[in-house]
Structures are given as structure tokens and as C-alpha cells.
Image (cartoon, rainbow, N blue to C red; front, top):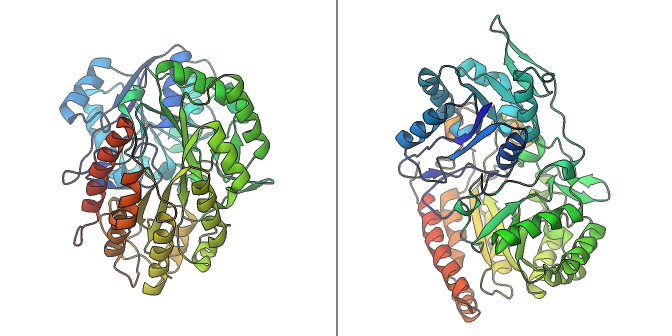
Length: 492
């Protein structure tokens, strides 16, 4: 079969949607955010290895116009088109499928992603979509679907479609794969890996997943109420690839010329100390330490001095750590399962051992008053200014309870929404969604402006050393201006 993995180009008032591999979507003025879509990348690779012809067509991150995008798709004449979607662009994708089917009548369209995993039937009511795949392992499911359509196997679990009478039916609840090591490494040339990156990551950056789902150690998993992926895609589980499998992929990426990898697994493997020790041993054995920098998502409560030291010795550069609120009451409300003191201790341990940190925070919880937001600001400021050096940074955003998440369900039941909860276009961070006594845009902008604090600027500039760092600083500055424009007062 001929299969396209596609992102139709979408814009809103000159801003681009941060859709690919994003747990939170906003339309942004920043042109520096081009995150590699990892599960679609695995899907494209799996399909190619199964013998299908595959077109990788990322109209958003390749900055394509709609005319050029449609021309490329029509020239390929796909049998299947796989599209990742999310609440704020769902209506656009429904309309696009209807339009595209007029010029590609024999092409079948497949929707995947967190929203359609919760509400698969909805897309059949509003569009002529052919299939919806639920769950996060759709990279494997789409291969099984293609095989089924060629008469080579049963319909896989987790698929929704219309029968001959037009009724929407399903093959049952999706199933997650037990053995991630069995998956082939992403075909980086097919998926144009050099087209992607972010302002805080070194070029040439390659994204990987050491696993899927958010682990806490000792058999526990994260259940944060705002995290749509953990609930919609991973069924509140955590799975890891083996250290040897990950190191083998890193060897390939070094050979391709990658200078940094970013592990976009929710917490990475750091909750498993034995995993981390074996990873360090293999990285050293293969001579890879010093040849590539490693950055990753992390939880502050999982980082302590021995782990931070081990990570620094293995070649880790940056940890992306969430500080979702500045008080324990809010963290408990979000089921964060970590206290503020542990988060702060983790940030300090990372900084003490030479790792840089990207801190992420949110404002706009309905239960949080002005004093609560001031505490969040104070904690973010304290942590950003703790032994800062070049590369340390912060991100801030408004709270978005995506449809189907526990936070969304709570907001519906408690009447917190300012909008119709089914008005999906409004989930794009351009307007306030929830009742809150604070000015969300003022505080998000104020958090971003912490980068202008004199002490932070002096320390950052004093630790600039290499040409690569200067280039990174310039990209970061451009991205910062873009993000601050996103939260201008009065927007939306």
C-alpha cells in the first residue's frame, strides 16, 4: 500500500500550531518549536519495513503552504493517510478530510491522538473519516490495519470504522505492546530528522523514547489529572526499553551526526536506578560518553545527588522538570504525587552537579487565588535563580484541561468552564477556559519575563563559552519573544 503520515498546514492569525509530540497545544508566534513526532515516526518506519510505500509529509514543521501540501499528497496518491489530531485542531482536520476526499476519493483517512482515543465516535459524526485508532501504540496498530486491508490478518484491537450499513463499530479496546525492544529504530532519513528542534536544545537534535508512560518506581505510575497522554494513550502505565536497546539507537544517531538526543518519555527511565546504572556502563563501554549530549523529561522528586552525579558522568546535559504549582495543596489536587520540597531538592541536585534545567509551570487553576499564583511565581523565581548558568530556562502556560482528562471531568462537574466544554477550537491557549480570580495572561507573561532578571542574565552570559552556545542563546532569545507575544494582554 501507499501510506502518507501527514500534518496538513494550519495557521491562526499568523501563528502556528504546536501539534507534533505536544501534550499541550497552542498556536504560537515562536518559529523555533519543531518537535519531532515520535509515535508517527515509528509508524512511518514500521510501515516501510512492512513493505509499504511511505510518504512523510509534515506541512506544519516544514512550513508548507496548503497548495504545495495538497500537490505533494495528490502526486503520491496514497491508499491511507495517517493524521495525528488534538482538540484545538480537530474541527480543521474534519473539514480537511472532507475536502481532500473530493480530490482523492479512493484514499482512506485515519485519525489518531489523545482526543480521538477518548471520543472515537465523534469524528464519524462530523467528518467522512474512515478509521480512528485509539491508544498510544498506534504505530503498531496502523501496520496491522494495513495488513488487514490487504487481506493478511484480522482487524487489530482499538480500531473504529463504519460497517457496510454506515454504523460505527469497533474491534474493542486498544492493547499496548509488552515488548518495546521489538520495534525498529525510527528511520531518520525517511522522517527528515534534521527538520526538527527547539530553542533550548542543541542542533543537530534527535528525539527518542526510552519508554512510554510515566513511571515513579516501585511499581507506581503517575496519574496527574492534567496529563492527557498518561490517561488517554498509555492507560496509566509505564514501560521501558532495555538499556542496551537504547544505547544501540544512540550509536546509530551518533553515526548520523546527531549532537544531542532528547528523551521525550514522560519521566524517562530515572525511576529505575538499576536501568540507569546499566545505561551508564554501556555508554562507557561503547565509547559514547562525550560524543553526544542527552536531555530528557524528569520529575524533581526522582532526582537526588547520586543520580545527578551519575547522569552528569553519563553525558546528560538538561532535565525538563515540572513545577506545576507553588503549593502542596495544588499539587495534591492535581494528583502530582510529589511535594514541593522534593521538587525543589531535585532541581538543586541537578544544578549542583552541572546539569541545566528547563522548568515548566502553569497558572489558572480555579481553586487558586492571587496569593497562590504569587507562590508559584516565587518558587519559579527561586529555582530559576538557583546557581543559574547558560542553558537554564523556564516555560509557562495557562491551564488547559483537555477533554477526557480527569481535570476536564472535574471542571465539567463543578461548573468551572467559561466556555462550552465541547467547543474544542477554544482549547488553544488563546482565551481563558476556566473560571479563575487571577489574570492568567499577566502572570504567564510575568513568569516568562524572569529570563530578564539581572542575576539570571549576568550568570547566563558569564558562562557562555562556545560558538554553539552563542547560537543557542540567539535562538532562545527569538523563541522567548515569540512566546511572550503569545500571551499579550487582550489576545483572544
